[in-house]
Image 1 (cartoon, rainbow, N blue to C red):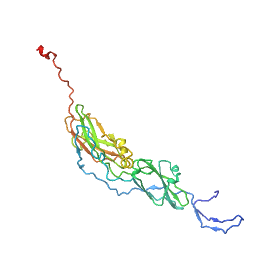
Image 2: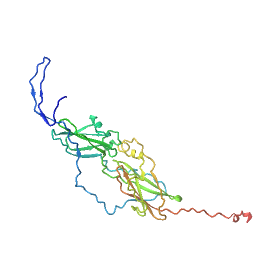
Image 3: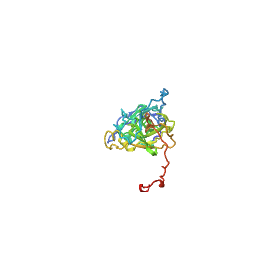
Image 4: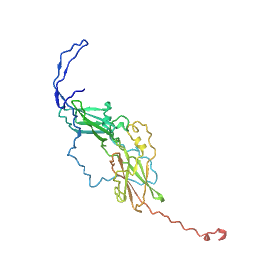
Length: 337
């Protein structure tokens, strides 16, 4: 403290010990050290590789399964839930460009995953700070740690911050690189549901029943989209909502029940009993024409399941005429005939 040292200048440091009688040891003269007064550069994310593989969808989509119209409310299909065959843990891989410190060099990188947006505050919790000498940061969580609050730093649904900084050999940290939102990419689309359409008699009210639910173990099914056409998978009557918004949500109780570690494994949440039903407004649909409803599940990251179809069904013209009133003069008791 109080030394007027100049940046990027080498100095000798001498040290000696003395006892309570005032006797000094020999002086230990250390090698010259470099005084580094500047922090290292801020870490940066490496640019992604230009070797990107593009997926070209087939010209003709696969033929979807078609489930029939029903006259009554269906019961659950055996199993109730279209469970995925595998459960994937959340994984995030970050690649950094090397930070620079021309005077003393880079000692290591420090990072902290936090819900706090300010890096200075986040780094104050030293127990949460991780250290690495590599420029590649690999993070893996556990699918069983969902929902949030169970101690897992990353997930498929909960956005957090990651703050990364370099520290030079003089002990000075750089400013922080902050990445938000830090969320694991869902590696799979949701599984498709089973659906049945029901037409309510003289009202032509359309009901869509889902006796076998789609599921996504990673980012959950947030709801379903539907389109309507005159053939399976056609959308010439009502198109898909390409904005990503669902037409009707998955019941939140079902989502909790379907959460690995909370419902399916632990059994904490009771199993739902009633089959979900969603009304579909048929205003403007053509009458006396075969119609099909196409449905797909949507997960928390906007990925779609494969399409399933239900139908055909027909909307008949409503008969709003009244029957002819009987002629009172023509109705006589037998004794008046």
